[in-house]
Image 1 (cartoon, rainbow, N blue to C red):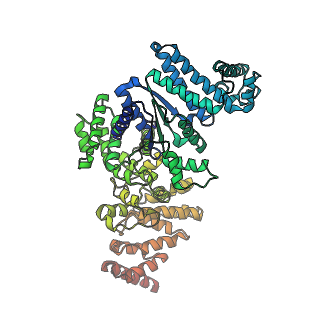
Image 2 (cartoon, rainbow, N blue to C red; image 1 turned 60 degrees about the vertical axis):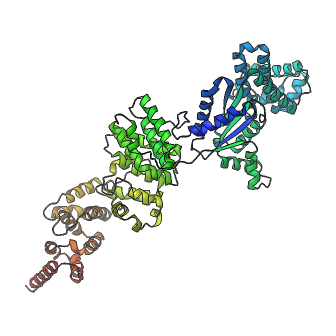
Image 3 (cartoon, rainbow, N blue to C red; image 1 turned 120 degrees about the vertical axis):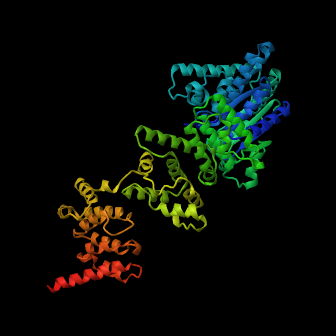
Length: 626
């Protein structure tokens, strides 16, 4: 299994982009800078941010103070602006307390930052509360608003201890007003003082504050906008660098939602984000080489190779990716050349990666998205584990091919494949056989219709291994969260299932005993049994006296609408498959009269068959005269 979280290991050759971004922060030399890492969900923005931080730390770690802020964690629990300010203030205070050689003055300023945050929390709680604090009255409004004001009250159960803590917070804020001689403090002035004090403290500490804001994609529009507005409070302060990872399309939708009463053009919506971001960095989309390399590095990570060998291979693959523009390839042969001894299971996985990378890149439903690729591989791993525990023998490459169609193909077409497997006696998706053969031999002439008419399906049909001739029941079993396994035999009573089994075992002649037992069944069950026998009969390629004919003749001896179905099947047999020995077996069956007459008229039916029909007719006429 692979973790869905961001990683500081480079699996996508994003390291060079992160290094360039880190170099820009370094060259800013304390001047304010803001960066935006944009891209759709799951493309690797968070990992890019991790790599950027890692790159900076590897250069001059002591000169930077890193703060990670995840707005999604605070959504619904705290005021986003105050939360960001508090996270920054606490990080600065911790750094100041660690820098003892700078003296107590720096710590005092850092502590003031937190007090200002608390003041602003109270100010935003309610005007009544702030007024009460200013004149020394009990903070009555704080009891109602305190759950959002003080973190210890967020459990929803206000205890005496919680109220004491809230009162202490109110006292701290009132005390801060007295200490600063600023009883007339207002939120705008307090915010400006916070900015000034933060800038001075960072200068005294000799560090650049690097704030990494992530997961805006997951936030509701109000939280996303509040986070960006909070970030605006810190912009253009010396010794600060802000890096935001967000889907720019999501930000645009959030802006439109925020200003829903205003008429905004697309340019105005775009400008809102652009004014916050000085350096835009877009995560590059993955091509086939990138996806193939990503798959192979993931398989290597989960292999039995030693970590040193894994790291060496990953570094070499990333370096190779940077050279693919010149025609160099990342494929199984190259990756195996990096590994001294490739384990058998890893070799099979590298081969799988080689084959499925193009379709994962071009499929609209995956489109080379790293997170979706991981999820697909995790699903594959879970199904392999189910097969192992349940002792179901499945081919991994066939399992992967079916999973690809399930995730990327039409739901209706996938359901059709599953129905074919369920209804087949041998668990084969026979409808795939001609399509896969055509896709392999002459893809240009492959004609697909309806839900199947899709470029993904064309690529999928040509993908190894072909599935049409395989028993896929095991794969359907371990994948059954999408559709239950309901075979035709499951629809029969126990008596009907036993009779079907007996019919399929008839080897020499039809059975009058089975005819009598079939008579005792309901007609709809006899029809289901006839369909199962016909399903087996459709696989026969030469019709003389095949074993399945005994079952067909036995079923057709029982009155019902299924007799006409059997007659139509016999009448539609390909002429080349019909041989003379079958004629005497049909000649005395009333329902077969039209079948034999049709064969006589068919020009492609062989002469021996027609002579046998003529002889049978003559014999029947002679018997009638006697």
